[in-house]
Image: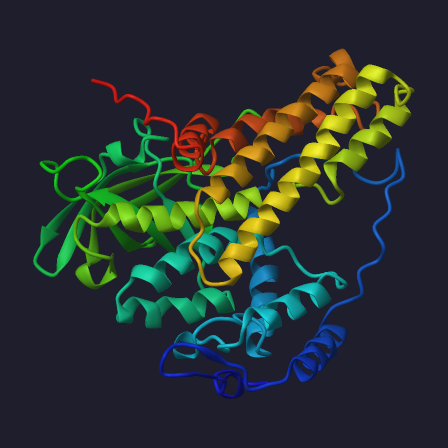
Length: 421
């Protein structure tokens, strides 16, 4: 199916979706595409002592491996998009098919049965940056970036955190100064995932230092290849470099690439953050199989599956895993009817990291010193990568402390935390 056919789907003048293909025909088209282009996924089995025992939360790749994975992902993304399945629910005006979420569910359900390349390189761009562009960008920017992002031609990153203002986003110091029809951006961002591979980035800058800190911010889309942009990898305690610090020195950004109103960047940032927490909170912890199952297998291997204390810890992990999944389903149902993500996303992300801490407690009980000292035994020291990755997950997308404040104030109605003098 060529792009002209893809964009022949319609939306009414009021923006309502008008599906021009039946679900049955769409399902048949998806099935035919997948059968022709992807191998069937074999049933996942887990046999203790066989295969890789890697359980890391963050990728530990070399630049060469990054480039290879991007090339593979890009080729697949283009094939999927050109077949009509790259942005199923997106507006036709920007390259989507304009179909309802039912069609996206059909594709997602069928796709789980096939083995496809990892698309994690596009996760931030499509999960966080593209929705913000759609909601807040100028028509020029929407036309320039949305279709290429969904086709895999453009990788996007998020440029929010700074060395002195991680969780307190409103205190950021990177500045943007107006210069005619352009802005000059100067400052530093940190903990930027995928910056080394990105073509564009969503950045929040201070544009009026005299306004209250929440009100003097403005969002932009910046060219990550522009003069004055420097990306440096950050080595983390897992040994890898999944994050970067990014320096901006008088980087020129057209005013047409501004997101929303001048000094209206806080609203823009909230749109992105809620989508970020939806993406993180809906994740499965980074393992191919449910983490709880791996832990049960570990307990069996260590001869501790009958230990009442271990069984209690495992039960707590499994129960909270299930509860978090149901919480995420409720949040996704809200999004499915057109509502913006709310504090439920903070709850989902907080639930995920809280359960990761429980998992670390079980690992400590089961493995003891072999969790931190490599004995060479399969499936033991490998868990150290998971253990060392959890602190990063507790920071990404908002620290646990910030998310507890959000839940306390916006869900439970507790008094707002006193501000620092």
